[in-house]
Amino acid sequence: MVLGYPNGIKKKQIPYEAQIVRVADEYDAIVTKRQYTTHVNISETLKDLIKNAKPDPKFLALDQLAEKEKNGKINGIILKKLFKVVIDDTLYEISGIVEYVKYLEQEIKRLEVIDNYKKKAEKSNKEKTKQYYLEGMKLLFHAGETQENCTQILEEFRQALTIRKDMIQKLYQEIKVIKKLRI
Image (cartoon, rainbow, N blue to C red; front, side, top):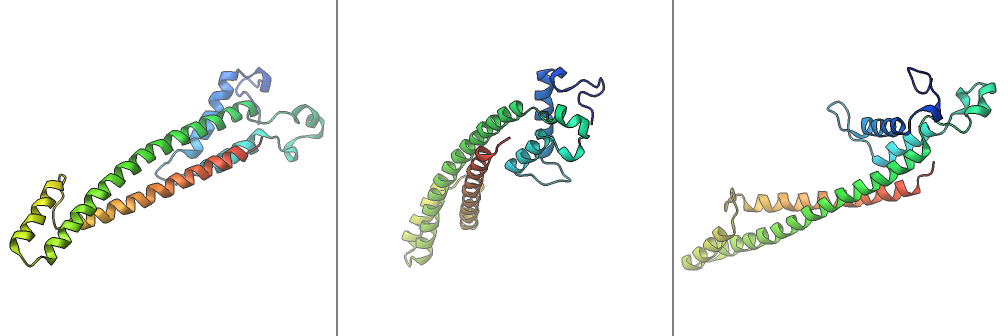
């Protein structure tokens, strides 16, 4: 592969900005979700880029080995900067999920109170006590919530909370892997 196509320019002749764009474009092409592919782990993507930053001696002719030994296809400095950007972006993503987790936890508490009122209303033998709890439920309902669906909504919120907490753990694990990557 000739670097700098179509002009055939070599590594140091390629403008630094173009090298940055190439790394960013390759990263984006690999990690972007498309309808025909699934999402790729960030750390696995960076490992692929590292492979592309290091030359493969199997494909170098003997007379070119010394010249190209130090040059990979991707600028390693730019790749290291990409690592920092990816870590920062992942931390930002985690912060957004953490805020959503807080929201879910608040909603779960509210829905648990409603569920508790519902159970007390169902157990009550006195109509006045039953109406007291049903009215309390109505005060806590949000749009679209009813006596019939509040237990299901509570369960859905609990599932969403579990999924988001797992996502946070996976993203922190990705950061650990990325920090260990070497070019």
